[in-house]
Length: 325
Image (cartoon, rainbow, N blue to C red; front, side):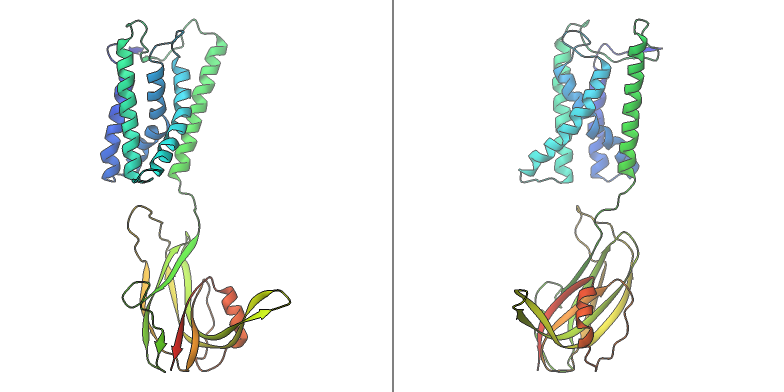
């Protein structure tokens, strides 16, 4: 069976249509499998193929290359072209974002496809490179050529399958937890700085789990009286804990939330946390986040003996300085 396209470059036409179809698929966030199926060739093969075709529109002659060379060079050039497009976008006002990258990639494919078509049309019909699908090997090919062709085809297939696997199977990125406190207005300002004895103040405490697993957190609030002391023997400042009083705590279980770098940031867990302090003085109000169950503590005892341990083993820590009168 033999299929030959001599009237127009069907491969260039398919590449341009493929790129144009990818635009609405990505913009309207159509099924992820469809995006992967259409997106992979548009990133890994089509840009390089369009460039190679614009440079070598002729068939295998002194001025052209054969189909095997085109395929191999198309993969290699595509891997080089796409990062270069991203590098160029990095120095523009649009930056490296989804829509600018998509627009630039599609524009490159369409422009190079048009150039390829024009150069192909200007060649004599007997010199043009055409897609000639033949499921049998040419009779004049040696066994070595046939073997090399098969090996190259298998190598390309394995590479594509491996790449699809890497993209489709999600990999674990950086594991971390967002832990923050906000003022009552929901912004990083207007925190309570001056408090009255046993009078409640409120802050917003928030947690977002990016640990790729269910996390059981414990949040503790401590009022700490501390000072800095210069240790001459080590030539550094040391923190001296004088008093440490327990204020409040809560246990929270949160599922993993994927990181979305395109959409707006959204909180996962937040609480308007009201607390009071039953002692006067100036304190470091420490909000400590732990990833394991913690003991219960009496609010009226001074727990300075475990201050160093608490501060060292906390997974995350944020604090305010408050004065209680």
